[in-house]
Length: 326
Ligand code: HPA
Ligand code: ZN
Image 1 (spheres, protein in one colour):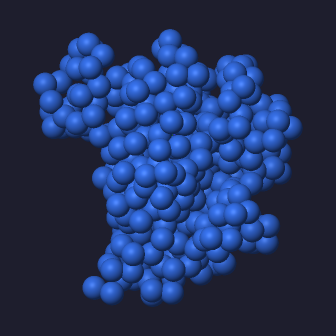
Image 2: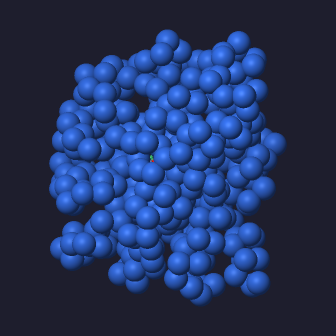
Image 3: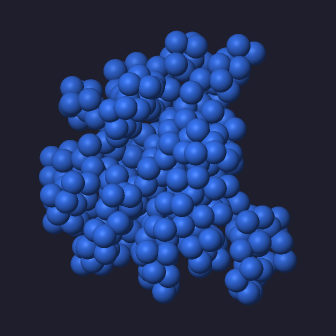
């Protein structure tokens, strides 16, 4: 159809993608073999079958388990290169990708190993795939604020290669204010700020409020719950805060609770864009995510174009690229 062709061809921008969430089952087994790591499963298909998940907490179990096969700089390079290759094939031209340094440093992999591998993949993707990528370092919110601060300090020698900081992992009981000092310091160091606000509980609205007022975020990952609060919704519109929403992962985690949310955000005038979160687990890269939104609530080509353009608007583009994409 025209819509399918438009989705395939429109230049795309990925802003909400955990690079460790692109670790496909086949690569898990290849890296396990390479690193001499014993897997409790015989092959990728069995692993998938035996690791069902139904919410964020159960998803995170498999997510953290599988990434233990990432050990060397080359492993991180191969992970990111596999993603960039897939993304470029979907006409993704610009990507700001999350990585979780503490998910690696906490098991003995050095910060520098992670960043050097990812950085080399970024350099090669710019050259060979015409895909410009940047790195966003996420703190794991279920670890302490002190550990986040230490990670922030550890990042400083690499700061030319990290565009901003985010906050992910288990949100329950881990509000934005827990990391107030860390984000203030990150801002002072010149990092741009984003964070996940996606709790499937009444507390989410407090988290969005804190992200806006206490942390002073530049954008919010998910944040769909603003639809429940007209005041907050108006403020997000007024301040031009971008929301990076993930229709497929949201569907897994919340069932049909937020079906049609993207269209409602668009209609409310929010700077909303559509992204893939953890595509190896939720079965869909950015083109499939746009298709999912269209399947939930039919969109016009103009509306899909707006979603694609909103992503570039929300992105932290350097001036030269802004001129190219907008
Ligand atoms: N939500 C929260 N934390 C995460 C996710 C997610 O979807 N993926 C990786 N870390
Ligand atoms: Zn996410």
